Image 1: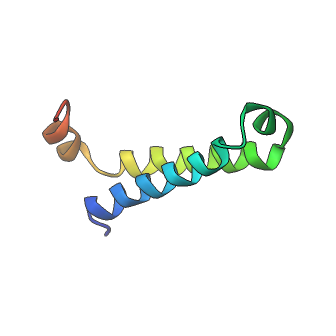
Image 2 (image 1 turned 120 degrees about the vertical axis):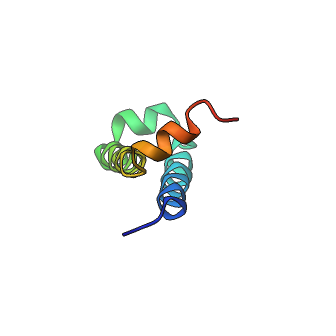
Length: 65
């Protein structure tokens, strides 16, 4: 089982990859289906990693600054 640090790293990696393609601009995103799929895929990675952090993690760090 992966620990929370690994899952948080997955989230950070996915964000970095999204930002790389975000730099191409909205027009590129709207015109290129592969970029759209790439973005959705990495958003799914973020969602799955966040969900798998577990309830205890979310309760512990909810609103934590």
